[in-house]
Length: 400
Image (cartoon, rainbow, N blue to C red; front, top):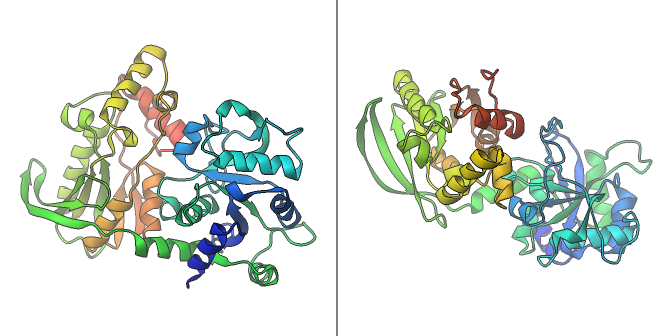
């Protein structure tokens, strides 16, 4: 079995695993176990060998179910770790700080029957929000925990904390982590190994049709793709040789209101047309049109409901989604990355202002240079663009 298989097996048996990230990133190791198996003894073990700053990684759907919002609207943490509001489980606990109380809170976060009203805020356990694409989108311990627990057939909520040296003065790294795993007889796996494992297991996109397509921006080769389990077809518009150099690439999320109706509430239509024109001018590039991404993945009907909240209750694009109990951004770029790989693309100049897209393409093993794709705001979309900049971390610099 691989190291990943060993870790999955251990987690499924209520065990603990050690996950190590890249030496160029945090260069740290986290103890990880499935949240539903946390008890007083296991939490005490974590407190003995880690920093004690216990976190539980969850996905966007779970965060929405529990009404857990981000700790701060603008995240400036070095690695972009998405901290949610800290919590304690109220029933049957006291101060929330003991190993037993913390174990109760950790288990509760994995319990599908948990009533959000049973969580005190703030508390002593820190939920973390994992990216939808897991380690293929962001190579962090948060995503590794959720990925591994899901692969073990569990809830997907993962208890995690960084291992420290015995004197507790610094983080344990390198050979010290390997030695810890040997002494404690627990599996050790790197995030790079997990990314490779997931990439190999990911369903491969298949071509369903292709034809030359003359457009106002020039003639492209249009290729339709289907990704297993998605129920939609995506389209790649390809021009020129994209297998050498660094062709322009745009990952464009479907937007019926902007792309077709010409809505002024977003910048999607403008970005679509400008990307096609830029690729045509460059002579080589790919535009991947991603179906199923309407409204950052919530669908057309819910997007229109969110528009109503923005218009009549003054909510921004983020708070409107949250108010409806929907993910802030539920898009997954895995199919887009598979399409690029199928086309033989290895290096890209990515037309985007969205750091999530950069991370997703990099996580797929492609070399990425970001190319700004920003256009002037109008009075209908300026608040939307400000929210993308201030709350979603988009690189937008033309706004006042």
